[in-house]
Amino acid sequence: MDEVKKLVTDIKNGNLKPIYFLMGEEPYYIDKISEYIEANVLDESEKGFNQMVLYGRDISVDDIVANAKRFPMMSERQVVIVKEAQDLSRHIEKLADYAKNPQPSTVLVVNYKYKKIHKNKALYKALKKVGVVFESKKLYENQVADWIRRVLAPKEYSITPKAAQMLVEFLGTDLSKINNELEKLKLIVPKRSQITPEIIETNIGISKDYNNFELRKAVGDKNVIKANQIITYFAENPKDNPMVVTVALLYNFFSQLLQYHGLHDKSPRSVAQKLKINPYFVKDYVVAAHNYPMRNVSEAIATLRIFDLKSKGVNSSGIPQGDLLKELLYRIMH
Image (tube, rainbow, N blue to C red; front, side, top):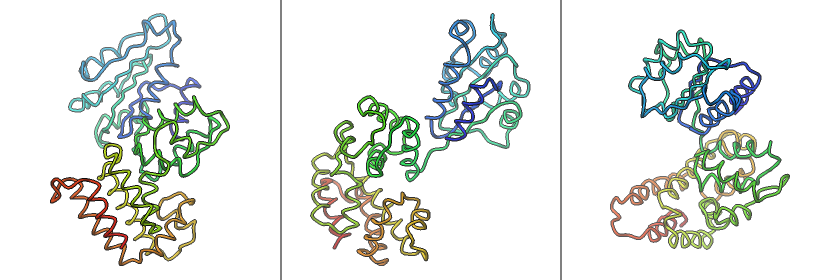
């Protein structure tokens, strides 16, 4: 995120490079940088003749080069944006010759999503000398809640740890999806407000009481009644609460719990750092570790592996999801 801010600041200050090669698994920042260049490098009066958008599925690398070598009309520079350039992955190395001697009056933006070019190849080496190579890495799940807070802060919003975790568990690590939901909330929630689980439930439709986050806490607390209430809700709403996701999240929880048992330093700060969790949730792991000694944690992980296969249809043909979840929780919690 800091790298993106610096890159945008450089562009805003007129420190432009002839090529921006934007690549990586997370498309959110690739789109943001490309959209910023498209909107801001040229004036509206210049865009008609000097800004074009090409699509990888419709062109060749030779077409990119031909357009990039054009001279601008009645403007200091032109902007050429190539979207979905990953469709040219088999031939993208051919861009190396242009990258070695790019047209100074052209700003070429290549959106190369979900992939990256090899650092030991000629294209990467040439791009690093003359332009910007930006790799947008996918965030780990434990990093997304902090990303949400950082995105909201400049807009004068805050969010509770539970509300942020609800978004992560419902939407996953897709930053574009999460950002879209945050943008909707900004239209409803006044500035300088805190986004709470109640606001998430009312406006996005994620139950604040019946979700994987609450199930994980109920299991950790060995709250059998609460856990069964949640899985009953899941069984009634299977499309919104697929078992495979629930099993994966519980597996991750018990894997972290196993790691917690092995820690020498169990101070909250150390636990948060080692388990890569928000300090707010450390107390949940303390309680769960008391309820599940190391041996029980190992047994739970083994059970979850079995039910992971069952959730995918192995040796469980025709068994309803709700029944599988009930059996899973019974084995773990008793």
